[in-house]
Each structure stands twice: as structure tokens, then as C-alpha cells.
Length: 491
Image 1 (spheres, rainbow, N blue to C red):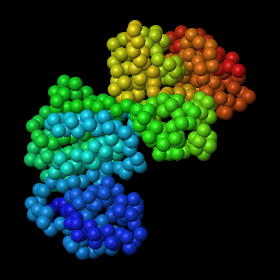
Image 2: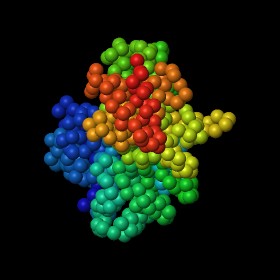
Image 3: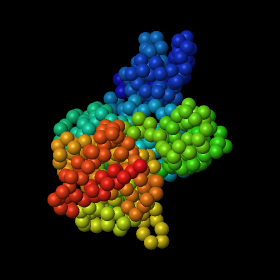
């Protein structure tokens, strides 16, 4: 019996009558795909007459009360070969809406038709990487006789990924990574497959993962692998005709307006362009902020913009914070400085403010790494490039900086030990060379955070910290004294 089945036209009519009796829609009734333990995407493919896994095909029929599922199948299409490739993107998420990206879709389609074996799609969280791939797969799935979508949310090692794929292809399991890789490559040589690995950031074994992905791209086969990631992959030495990289940016103004229009904004509201620019066209960011603008500001975009703030929903905040938690110590120090400056800063200027002299090559390497992780924006002028944080990242980093600095001050006062004050030592929180309100932003936030803990005792707490600096070397003190005095004097 085949591993996959598809419905006949007559069978689809039978299922259609069954779902009408239940009052269900074809694809929008969540209970249907939930009862069948599948996804909306698979239910959609069922209605398109595409192949889906046999077990899921049966479950979809049974969910609407059809037990004799054999009467639904297309008997002319049944293949008795157990190795028959099948389509399975049950792990693909449901996407609420998709706008624009026509140029990106055309580019991806062209790459695949030209024989590209590996496509890496990268970009900041919420930018729409997964949605783009779902839209692409909807368009091109007929070009393949095997489609596998793997969401890496619950796969944390290369071994788990390989075992998962081996099981998907009904191949013998092996603990040997090299042997497993070659089994998969051999399968891709025999069958034209499209494999989507969505969110490979979750696999921590970077070297093993890169090795496996490079093997997929270097061997001869007729398949294509698409990965999504927040970090650009290091494959610059591979033939660009075989491996392609797409760095996904925010929606264009026209595309963002289409999204906002679907949420009740006509595009004529004052401040709408500023809103799009503030979120850099990030689709998820715009989707999360629009309900707040409607409920808190009665749909007045300009009133929201005038608050001079940026709202980051919990869903997006969690993903971004997870990414920031995995940064190296120097990467974290750099992004804290960029959050303090709040505007593009040159490499040379950044270098001069680091408390400990570090090899410029090392600092530059970390900046490149941050850019590859889609955290930085690069501004190029006639002199030299400058770097800043994307607004969403700026908001998260600023909040985290204040939260962590508050925790460090609390530990310092409890233990009477300034070694806890790493942030205050390594960073001048009052933006260097400024006395404007924007430059005092972090000092203001930190003082408010400390006041919530110490109240009227805060001045005494700050004086205690200054006393702890007596007889300490300038290198040990760093910026601590400057920061504590700024906190004391802030009104």
C-alpha cells in the first residue's frame, strides 16, 4: 500500500457533503484539522487533490464521520511501491495573512528552476521568513514529487534532525552522522524533493549542522533544501549557482499599507508612514501594534507616534530575547553601547569607548557577526560605515540593559562588592558628549527602576556605592563613578 493517498473528484464531493452537514468550512474550521491531528496546510492540500500521508488522509475522513475512507481515494493513482515519495508539511505553521513579497517569490522560483540546491533565507524575528516559504511552497509544490517541512522548534541536535528525516523517508536509522547524511543524500538523488528546515537557529551544534548542510549542497542530486534562520550562513565559498542566500528585509511601504489596510487603517491616517518606518516594515511588529493603536488610541496613529515609544508584543519579545541571550560577552557589550548611543556610531568611535583595549580586528569580527544575526543596521556615508540597532532590537536591548543593571546594583548593595557592577563599569550610560534628553534616556529609566526598589533611600544607596570605590584602581572602577553621579544628579 502506498505511503500517501489523494482524494478523487467524486471522493471530494462526498467529503464536501459530510462537512456541510457538520456546518464546517473547507479549511477555516480549526476543529477539523485539530481532530485529525494535522494542520490547516495539509487540509488545504487534501482539498487540492494532492498526496498526503495515508494516516492523515484517513483521519481527515474520519473527522467528518466517513469511516469507509477507501471510497474517497483516487484508485487510479495508488502505487504499491513502498518507497513512493509523499508530501508532508504537517509541521508547517498556519499563517494568518501574507502580503507582498512578489519580487522575493520570483527570485526564489528562478533559483529553484535553475537548479539551486540550497537556499538560505535569513532575517530578524517577525520579518516573515516562514510566511514567505509557505507562499513559495504553495506555488511550486507541483514541481516536486516529495515535500517535507521540518519545524526545528523541537529538534535540538543534528542527530535528532537526521533521525527525523531518515524516519520520514522510511530509511534505516543509524547513530552515525556521516552514514545518515549519505543515506539522505542518496534518497535526494533518487527523488526530486523539496525539504524545508524552518528555524535552524534552534540547533546549537553549528559545526555539525554546517557540515550536514554543506554536504547537501555539494553532492549531485535533483532536490532543493530551503532553510530559514535569523543568522546568515557561512557558505560564501560555495558556488552561488548551487547555494543562494536571501536576506529578508521589511515590507515595502506599499506592502505594509496593504497589511495595515486589512486591519482597518486606510493608509490616509496621519503618521502611517512614520509607523511603517518605526517598525521597519516588520510584518509581525505591525500586526502586534495595530490592535493597541485601535483600542488605546481609537485608531489614531499620530497619537501613538507622539508617545515616542515602541510597543513590542510578548510573542516577538520572547523570540528576540532568546536571540540576545545567546550572544557572546563582547557582542552583548557592543549592543549595549549601541543602545546607549541610540543613533549610528562609527567603528572607530565605538572602539574608543570600550573600557578594556581589545584588538580592533576582534571587535570588527563581532560587529560582522551581529550584522549576520540581523541585529544591526549599517549606515554608509562618504567617510566610513556606522552601525546602530534596529528599532525593535533597540527597545528590547534598552529594557534588558536597565533590568540587568538594576539587578547588578541590588547584588552590589547586598554584598557590598562592586564586582557585580559589570554594566555600570563597562558602559557610560549617559550618552558620551551629550546633555540632551535623548542622551539621558537610559539613566532616567534606570533611576526609575531603582526608585521602585529603594524609594526615598535611593540617594543613600548611591552614596554607599561611591564609598565602595575608594582606593580602587581606575581600571576596576571604569565608568561606575560617572554613572552613579549621573543617577544622583538626575532630576
